[in-house]
Length: 175
Image (cartoon, rainbow, N blue to C red; front, side, top):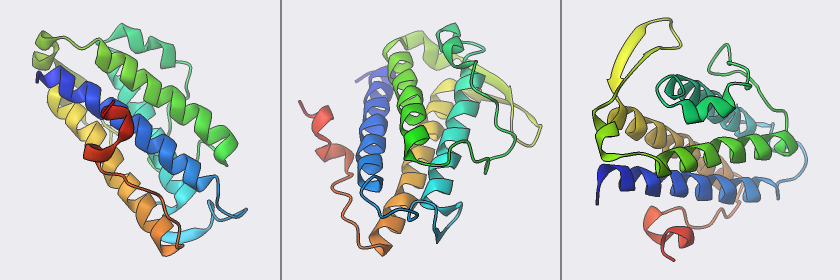
């Protein structure tokens, strides 16, 4: 399997898991999404917001060398990693879908020689960085999985069944 095929798979897994966990969050009692549950970003909603913030930042950085991502330039650039972009599922779900679909479309266009690209960007602390694209992609999808793990931990503490999250058993990847 080529390196780009791996990221095509990760983009689809990422989208499916986000949809699955958002469906579960939609079953929570009113206020539970915003309630503190001692996660790094405090609440389930705080964690979802952090994932939105970081994806917007990464997609904007990537749009510099991949113009097809310019469609996302209308999104506001978050000021901090804990910026609250959305206040509930009604605004969270469409933005999450938009970002996840952008990753899928973009990963579908990756070519073998893109693996040699280096992304130059300014990080959230104002530091100039240069990282290989394959490492950036691995970080993006690993970061998503890490924080979804926090979301599933929060759901577990609430006694909520969130289903199977293993990549190996994701139906959309096994058709």
